[in-house]
Length: 360
Ligand SMILES: Nc1ncnc2c1ncn2[C@@H]1O[C@H](COP(=O)(O)OP(=O)(O)O)[C@@H](O)[C@H]1O
Ligand SMILES: CC(=O)OP(=O)(O)O
Ligand SMILES: [Mg+2]
Image (cartoon, rainbow, N blue to C red; front, side, top):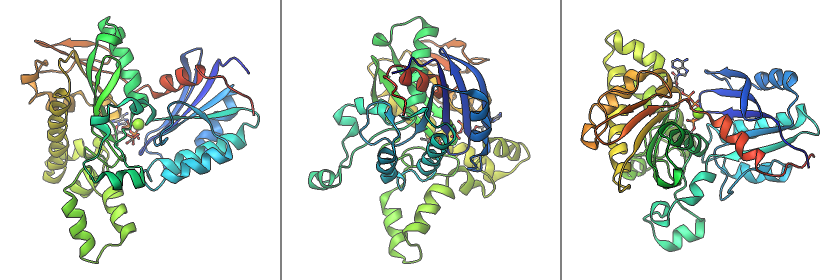
């Protein structure tokens, strides 16, 4: 066993690659590609300069895994089973993990899972309204994603409000290329908008989010779209990108909207309206609300869009305006609003430091 002090964190999102070196719980170096093509060179360049004790790779679908695991060849092969459910994330994360193993021989490479946080979801939130024989035969259950981000956001909210996690009721909006809303009470998730896969729930940069299942069945029944075509349509060609016809990147869309583009305006309005609806629905799963927390790339850089979401939520006792800067508490009549940077790297470091790391 070795004491872990230098963690190289690898966080492949659906639009970005975020690398960080965390030393004794603090980020000392980072490299971010916010329009990542999937290339491995940023990891190779970063790994060369960092000499880590351990590498932590964010993997969105960990099945039933409750915490970090060592990414042995067998573990990587097992995780690949979930690639079809998370094609924007899982294959890239597994490629990065294999690259890290090759680049840093002798250094432990661990997977940290978005889904782990949600293994604590109550049965009523994870259960799917399908025949029991079907859910049992195929092990179907609602899961939840963005768990590393939510875990950090809730802990940081506790610090900033000077409240114990055991008494805090929070709704966390993770608003990046993927978007989710999670209700957390007394340190545990109680509901989340992404379920069986990261395609569920809110529309994202290129994902449709939830649709009437009849629509999917109807498209299949036309015979014009096979499974692969339909998967690409719903996961890569829908959401903001599909509605606008131009881009899923909120920077491009905000600019287009300012220039008077009605498709960009409708795409953004659809996402913000559904976000408000999902936040109200998450609030309904809590007996009280202390704070609404916005995090993720869009929330970090676009307080104006957070304001658009808050506009229709004053009935929840929230302030009308988001805080003017990140990590500031804006108090409303009965609950606060915060904007926090997504710090998945700090949660990954915390998790890997808590497990005995065995050098390969
Ligand atoms: N520096 C920036 N300025 C403005 N917007 C940004 C910036 N970086 C990222 N974004 C926006 O955040 C979104 C991606 O969020 P992020 O959480 O980084 O995504 P991912 O899902 O890849 O982790 C994109 O829509 C992008 O426009
Ligand atoms: C789970 C998910 O959608 O992640 P991201 O927002 O990083 O794409
Ligand atoms: Mg992300």
